[in-house]
Amino acid sequence: MKHIVVLTGAGMSAESGIKTFRDADGLWEGHDVMEVASPQGFAANPELVLNFYNQRRKQLLEVQPNNAHIALVNLEKNYQVSIITQNIDDLHERAGSSNVLHLHGELLKVRSTYDEFDVREWNHDLILGDTCNKGYQLRPHIVWFGEAVPLIPKAISICETADVLIIIGTSMQVYPAASLMHYVKPDTKIFYIDPKPAIDSNSQVTVIDETATVGVEKVIKRLNERA
Image 1: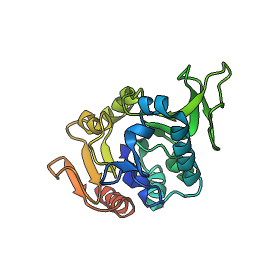
Image 2: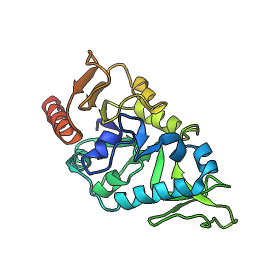
Image 3: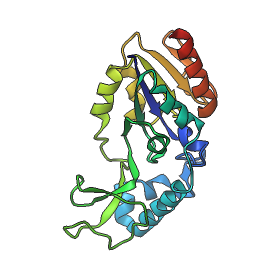
């Protein structure tokens, strides 16, 4: 069974109503990203950061997976499918995808500021005073700017075994995630779906300048034609 690896970014969830990470002015929901997505920001104003993610969490619980999420689930009928996502939402899982790797953390989880491996499910507000069993403040289970991306080695291993790589809704500007496409085999076919593509088509890469829902449908049609 062929192995399809899917790398998804903010554009994957945009049609579900989740805003992309940063607007053109570099702000995220009106905040400088370093204020709300860095260890320094959390140290300077933890309450602001916690409130910011509380709002993101509430928004996530109000939206649903879109047709692109569902189409990727249906791919599992005929292919081995591995999803590597830069998104912190759980829309891939809610749609039914069985193999999802979250590079940048998960919004519906929190962890201890003392022990990064002390992670727990969390679907309500996180406030100052919410602590782990050892008495240390809990924080969002998110990879912030300036922090290591611990799952990158696993993501690289997955990409190295891909027969097809589908990249959806990512600017290809956030590293190390943007480097993953360079770890596939030379004969691996790459499809890149984005309404404002950051790379060009070549012998290996086919660019589809569409939204996620339209682009995924086109890619699946091409895969079926090649099968």
